[in-house]
Length: 236
Length: 236
Image (cartoon, rainbow over all chains, first blue to last red; front, side, top):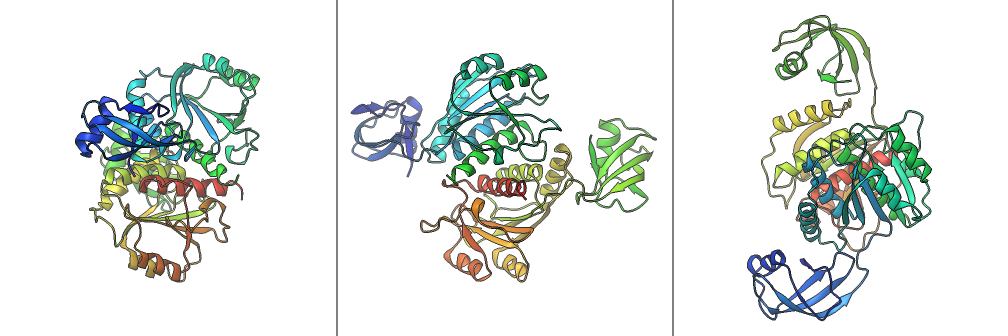
């Protein structure tokens, strides 16, 4: 069944955003009294009745609210250097939401081509992917410089991995032991991480791993990470 | 290093296709005497010297030919019902070539929306993905009706799976035991396989499996299958 998105479902009454109202009232022709399903993108799901079918500000009364619906068993935080062509990142975001992901950080690295990252646009794409795939987890999105990200990760308890194409490195993400519910995976730009970045990550406890035995494009590597973690969670 | 594609590298001299010649001579400006690398898309890789830099028919002398380069340890045959929007299948094909796949059959099922499958266009996309990802395995592509595909599979020794969204089915592709080097994976249309098709597959020894715990879109399910098998091969 179709979900509509509202970030806070803990109140007795909610009003949908402009875009969600339009989808609910104009596109799907819901009217006063209709019951629909809402998600807050954090695993919360509500049944709600429409009290005002205003196509720009649809209001609803929450009838029933349930938490922790359809959340993945492992939380992946993917920190990935955005590609020059943002289409490829948008594609990754869409597929990552479909497979299930907790956080995505777009990482500006030493070898990054510094694309313009439009977080508003990416948020809209994520919400639309959430609704299309009928899932309940909307990832937190942010843009950070590599070193600021490293500072942010200090003291966080997680399995920390950095994808790094080094000939001497034969550890694979899919066979590494996991110790925590949270996993952080760093994926570098086309020109790879600088050796200084890898050194800094190592000091922060990141383990160098490979994503299979082929050199994947950035966005394929990102989805490989999401799917690998989703598959691991099936064996828990 | 860049590969150029020629389907047969067992001869002492080869002439590239129109498109490959243009890429080699016009785009990358290779000249007589230059040494380049060729792949036959079947794991064969050659070093060759240009003897005629004709931008429409570039000829080369094979200097060195090696077989079984970069082939996956498991051969996946993905048989998938094409989506109405062929863009999504083209995207899958591109990513599947990147990850490594042996065969793709576009399966016309009872619930298929019967899109027009342009195999020539798909072949061109596959060759371009092969070159872009610098891999050596070009999948065999075909279009078949479900029942003709079933006939084709009779007697073939392979692990045979059919993705089927049944509530009572909890077997996962990623944890099923594999007995053979060849794996066949069937993925149905948006409206799923008909119960009759599932019955026929079952009779042919296909095992019903799930691809994770979410309902994925057709093309995401296809890539999930490719990546699951690629990850399994890492543990062999």
